Length: 324
Image (cartoon, rainbow, N blue to C red; front, top):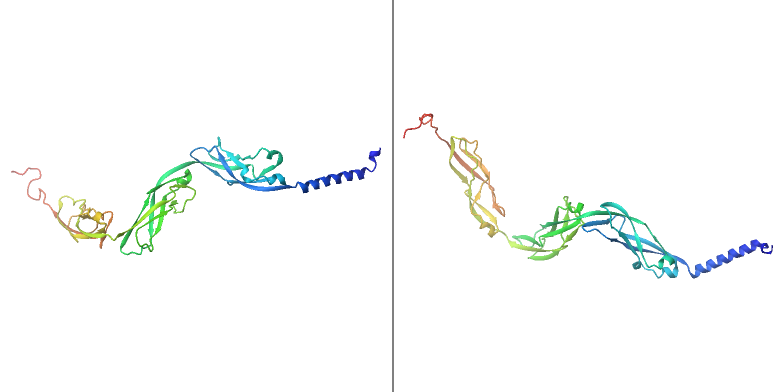
């Protein structure tokens, strides 16, 4: 048969022609790849729950096709989503859905680096926590006291329940070194756990607060009398007939408004439950809040105890009433 003549040469020519066509096509319309990185979006997120993407919140996608088609693509035309409809609490794996122009299906190939992601779903919690201000350093002005008032005085902490429950304090640290007068600043409070370690993965509302720092004159002083406070009295038939205190007065230091409210300072309760003779005691003072005692914070209390005569000792029969 004629067509079998020179069959090897004919097959070789056909293969060569095909290779030439493919080569020409590859030169005129080369196949290339382009890699995009897009954010992973969450849809149908349940309210009052926190969702964490454990394998990262961005997805790398390889777009493959002829050069003319690939060069018309862009990352903003690709959308990677995860549907949380019906997802359960805890950790789970959910599929990623890619959305892009319909014509890409016939012209291009999109290859995501992974088909599913690990997701953790936890309940959210909110707490209102007061702000604690910690002052350090010394202002340039001497003989002054510093006070710092945050506005607002508390913030709302929101986040995953397990993390929010670890919060022990919301704190502002302020260094007074070199301060020459009153100051108002905007500052960011720090959320701390029980070990004083900052907690970062919570939301703070408001995120910044205004701190008003005031330098006020050194507190004034006032002298007030000391009043011994007798607690348990001696056992019968002993009684207290006289007591004294040394010193009879002490000097208090504090703000004028607080000192105006204090007219006397008491000792800690003195127990004479087992006392049957004169007693001399060193007793600490009960220092009111907001003031301090200048000098010693203890006083000496002397108590004179006397034994009363019973009816039998005075000559009156114990089982007979005394005649009028």
